[in-house]
Every structure is written in structure tokens, then in C-alpha cells.
Length: 248
Image 1 (cartoon, one colour):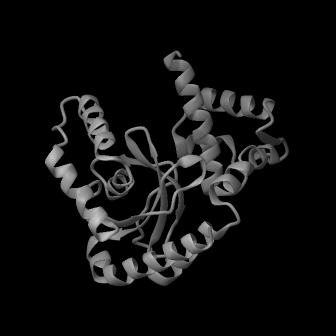
Image 2: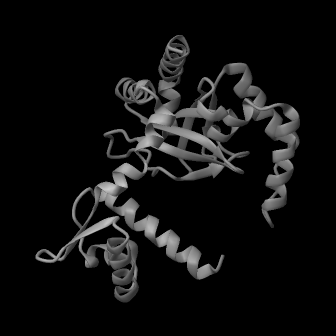
């Protein structure tokens, strides 16, 4: 696939994600402002999405808005991933009780990818968008997801991570084994300053998910605040996860 094709595909998804964040009609100048696209290429992309049926164009107001085709396109995914809504309800309760941002993650090759995020109302909230990825071997979500795997598979992934790191320091077998061992022993991982200085996450593994995939759930925020709330967060996580197991 050419670099131009990859760039076009990336921009198309960036536009759709922009609508998801803003949740209002957007004009060409809005897309330029938020995404930094040149006027010519931005206009061509929006026209293409209109032609394909993913956006509507309001000529009077000169604005664009997603069509129901977008909603229908991924409607089955939410049901497949979240079932009867018990998982989303669980995430809502975790946010309400702890006051922290709640994140659902799944392994995506050598990363832990955030597939659903419920942000806290705190102005100093742990700001992370759905779709964000974290290193599988160097993040709390990653350690939890790896903890569900056999040691032989973990070592295979560690070797792949090191081969993919370029000039970055290698991921030590001993360090990774220690992190995963802690997650297995405690039933959760608490990462501090690993990806973003000052931020951390307390994460735990969910019961086996659909299609054989493992999911992790975590609460993210400033490290001092998470340290202060650690007992509360861990207790609530365990209660909620036990509730999901009981509902199987």
C-alpha cells in the first residue's frame, strides 16, 4: 500500500473521530483548525466522505455532519464487545465511585489499545482518547494483559518488542517477569510515570471476553491521587469484576 493511500485513510478516520469528539456540525474551516489540513485537501476529503455516504453537507450553513451510516457501521461491535451493557454499566459505576477516568483496553499486536474511555469530570483529568496505544511491555495495561498469557508466549512477545524498538533500550526479561509476577500475585498492576510523567493507572484483568480476547480495565489519573485512593480503587475493581463473573 502506498504512503499516499495510508495518509488518506488516516485522515478519513481523523475526521470521523473529530466529529465524535465535537458532536456538532463542522465547517471546512473547523477541520482545518482542529486537524491542520490544507484547505484544498481538506475539502477534497470531506467531499469524498459525502460521496461515500458517511457525511451530509448542509449547503445553507456550509457545514458537515455524520450520517446514520456511521452509527450503523459499528453498531454490532458494541454489542459483540459489551454484550447486554453490563460492562459499560460497570465502567460507569467505577467512574462514579472513584472519580477517576476509566479505560477498557485490549491487546493490539505489541500494544495495549484503549477501546473505550469514560473520562472523569476533573479539570485535571487523565486525558487519553479512545484508540490510544501503550507499550505492551512497559505499561500497566500491558502488564495485566500479558499476565493472562503463558510464559513462553510472553517471552516470544518480548523478543518481538525488542526487535521492533530500534535504538531504544531492550526490554529486560527479568524486569518484565517482575512486573507480570506482581500483577499476577496482587491481581492488579499499578504503573507510575511509565508513559506520562505524573500519571499512572491501576489496572486489572477482566474475565475472558468474546472471540477469545482478553480485556483489561484500568483507572487512570495523577499518581499521588491514585496512591491515596489505591485501596478504594482496588476493592471496587475486585467487586465489579466478581460481579461480571457471577453474571456469566
